[in-house]
Image 1 (spheres, rainbow, N blue to C red):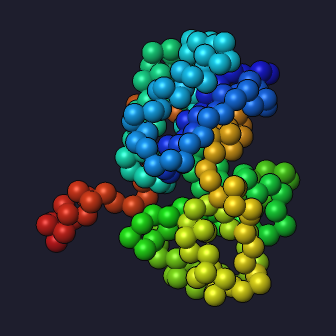
Image 2: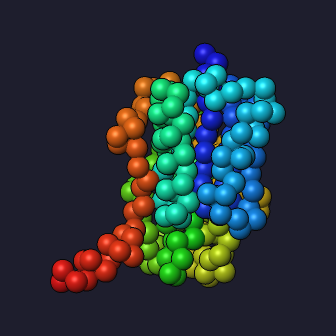
Length: 232
């Protein structure tokens, strides 16, 4: 099977788009320059398709990173993919930003802790392991202060993600030599990593209906926090 599909990742400031044909990566554009995803996402998608000599209607499917991550970034990515899928009638597979990061540490002998900086002195965290050459979640994804996360850890772990960079000193202070880190380029989220999960989802019939396609925030928005506070 050689499904032609496009994957969008706007969960972090390092936005990226990947174009794949089955298990072949045809191209990827990744930028981590602090610009708004709204201003550049459609331009990047068009550039990638043009360079590959394809039109959007030649795609068989779309993939999108649902979160957790930047609320604004996630909304932009999901809305863009939803619009493209609606226009073409193609299926969409959504994947976790933390699981996508964990795929960048293949076949690790130790559990992989994917961390994204959630601001407000918190991280989005997910713990994963490899079993029979497949990535498996070892618990629920969460948002919490990094010190609280680390207080529950007492084993060798491989850390990946921008949260691992931000809180590296704290991680080492808690775990010492049991803390392992991927090389610095691998801490950046990549749509091509999410594509591994998207392709699995496509082949397992895990497409999401457009009515159900929405970002996964984990954390409440500021508006929801204010509403909850007013409601007591």
